[in-house]
Image (cartoon, rainbow, N blue to C red; front, side):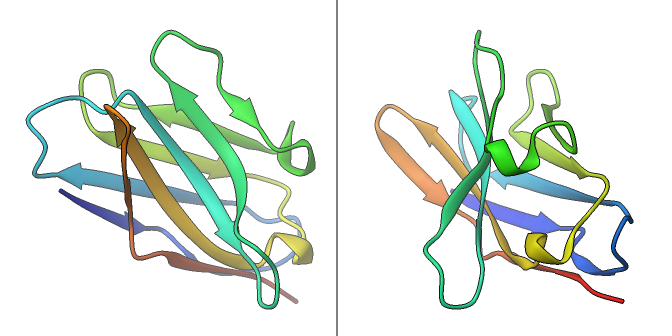
Length: 114
């Protein structure tokens, strides 16, 4: 199973980015897919997660600014990030899980700076 993220980059404060994560190699649909991030010198933290049959869950720091979504029937997840702040700067990782097994992508850098 492989998860490949894309869409990171450099953006000015107040700008937007859309991250994508495409999963391949699995015969089954992941039960849950989500985004985590890790800033320099900090622990990796949950940003948003979307699970089958449940309301998406967001970190308090991104509520109202970020939106997670999935393609129906596909192992692809997106993160729309609006009103970006310098403190959103981090490497963003995609995570997917099924049957107690979790998979991680390689990460994509998001830098918010003027």
